[in-house]
Length: 240
Ligand SMILES: C[S@@+](CC[C@H](N)C(=O)[O-])C[C@H]1O[C@@H](n2cnc3c(N)ncnc32)[C@H](O)[C@@H]1O
Image 1 (tube, rainbow, N blue to C red):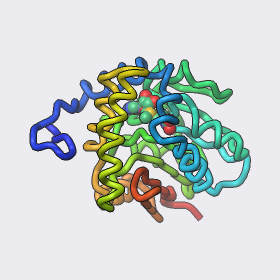
Image 2: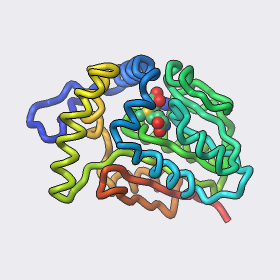
Image 3: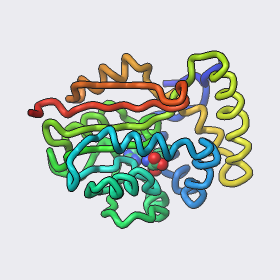
């Protein structure tokens, strides 16, 4: 199905299905070595505070076992380790896993087919990956499956500001400057795709319904920094 670019009337060449999985994997393999540097520049370092908030939102006892889904280079894993959690990381891209400097066990896998037992984890974090998943519903269902009843989910994702001034700044920076920065320091195609990929995100009410359908309750979705990012928290249904 053709998707539309945000703010554009023409159909965008955003891939779907197996083509999306292959392109996303190849893209992250390519940008892995400079991923962390560009992330910091792109968000002026603000992402670290949002990541700390995401890990804190798990609110689990120290020693709990946490899955970092689509862990990439391991930013959330590192913070989860610092909070006293035990962590396992998983990602589709072998390149991102090679650039992952954490001491956690790493598993190469697609989020829609996780090689973990049901109820294996107390918590799950996921940073900036929802829009990259080819089958979001299947990935949310797998996330629920590998969490024990009462287990906690905390997800960080990009968002689109609604306030006009924030929106203008966001459009200028994210859709104009970031692709130039990415092209200069890393890969042109990848950093052109990044702002376009926001179109894959379901609207908030739809995401809320998808989480409930997957087996989560107490779903909370809130904007961060005027909507530059968003945090999603939920509890695996069936807990105490
Ligand atoms: C924007 S990066 C985020 C990495 C890391 N979570 C962070 O917060 O910096 C998105 C990550 O999602 C991974 N990814 C994309 N599709 C995936 C899938 N179907 N299953 C597992 N990981 C996937 C990519 O390889 C990449 O590492």
